Length: 411
Image (cartoon, rainbow, N blue to C red; front, side, top):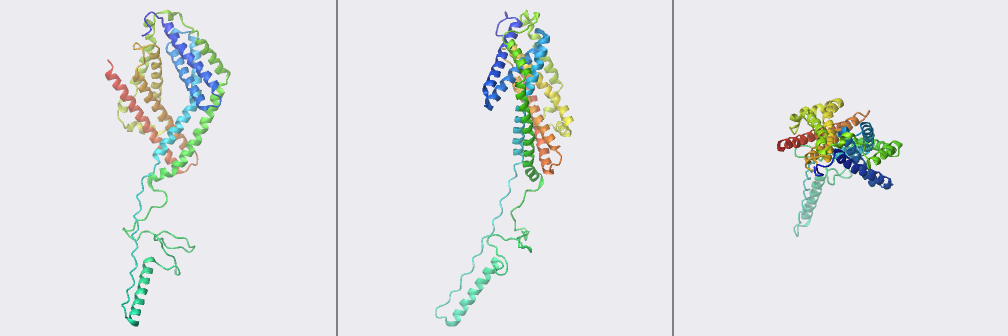
C-alpha cells in the first residue's frame, strides 16, 4: 500500500469512491454539453459507464465496510444504468464485427484467366504473275486470287450473306429468335471462360453474402436505434437524476460502517481476498484442459448444436469475466504493489473478445431463423455463425494461455 499504514479502511475506500464519483459527474457534464456532436456524446457515455462500473464494483466488493441498504440500492441503480447505456455500443460493435467477418469469408476464389485464342492464320499472298505470261498468266493469277478468298472465307466461317460472322470469338449456334447460344468446347484443347456465379460452397457463400449482410444490417441497425432511444430516455428520466444525485453525495461523503475505522492493512485484504477466491473457484470450474487446444472441436460442435447449448456453454465464461472485472477493480483500491496486476487486464481482454464473438454468433443464428429467406442467405449466415464460434474458441485458448503462464510465473 503506497498511502501508508496509518490510513483507515474507510479513508482509502472513500478516497477511491470520491475520485470515481468525480469521473461520473464529469461524464454527465460532458454529455449535457455534447449537444448534436455524436462523437462527444459517445465519449461521455463511455466515461459514464466506466465510472459507474467501478463505483458499483467497489460497493459490491467492500459492502461490509458500508451502509448495506444504501450500497445495495445504489449498486442496483448503477447496474441498470450501465446495462442500458451499453446496448447501443454493443449493437454497433456487433454489426461491425459481423460485416467484417462476412466480407472476409465471402471473398471469391481467384478464377484462372481464359486461355487466349490462337492468332488467325494470315491469308496466302497472291501468286505473282510472271512478266509476259499473256492470257495464260492472267488466268493463273485469277485462279490463285479466287483460291485465297475461298481459304479466307473457310477460316472465318459463314459469310455475312449466308449467316453470321465471328470477328474475335467463336459463338455458338443461333436459335430461331436470333439469340446467340454459347456452344460447348469441341474438345479438351478448347477451354472457355466460366460464365455465371461460381458453383460449390464458395460460390453459394458469395451469392448469399450480400443478402445476409443486408439482413444483418437491417436487424442490428433497428436494434441499435431502439437501444439509442432507450439510452436517451434513460438519461432524461427521473431515475437517472436520482442516481446522479446519489453519486454527487458520494463525491463528498461516503456512508461508512463503524468497522471501517480499522486500519486499511488489516481490513481491506479480507474483501479483496474473497473476490479473488471467487474468481479462482470459477476459473477452476472452466474446461481449461479442452481450451488448451487451438481447435476445440468438441466445444465447437456443442456451440453449433442449438442456441440453448451455446448459451449453457458460454455462461461460465461470462461469469468468470464478471468476477475478473470485480477482482481487478478491487486491486485498484487495494494492492500491495500499488497497481493492479497487468495479467488481469490481458485476461479480461481475451474474455471480452469471447463475449463479443459469442453474441455475434447468436445474432447470426437468430438472423438465420428469419422466415422465408433464400437458401444461399441461410448458408452464408451458417458459415458466419461457425466462424464466430471459431473466434469463441480462439478467445478461450488465449485466456487459457495467459492464465496458465501467469500461474507458472507467479511466486
